[in-house]
Figure 1 (cartoon, rainbow, N blue to C red):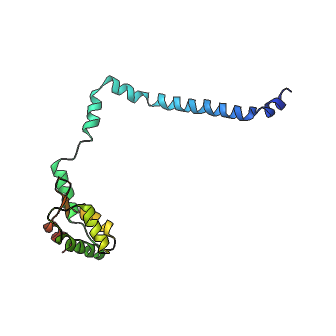
Figure 2: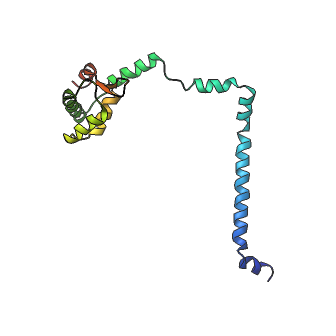
Figure 3: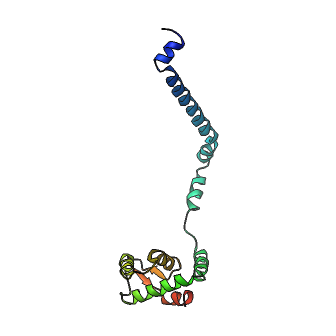
Length: 149
């Protein structure tokens, strides 16, 4: 058997397609590496750029955090969110000053509060419930009064 019959009999077409695919993907990968090589060489020539990349990812300064907190404090709650926040405030009154979020969420689910996860998330985003640094959280009554009442 010779020619096209031999190619058909021994899966020659499939082997040739796989070979062409491998070569093509290798060439595409090589072209992408070469097209981005200038960035690696620029970092190689000037290593101080690496330090600036990592410095750019540092946390915000205090004034930006304060402005962000003011924006959050002025958040607008819907009536159902206000009702959920008021129900959470009632639950927190039964707890200690420093409480855990899983326990609070468990109490909310036992009390059958609607949308307990989203309401708790809103309270965390608006800094009504804030972390105390030791794994527990505290209730900020002043922030609650401003945002909800």
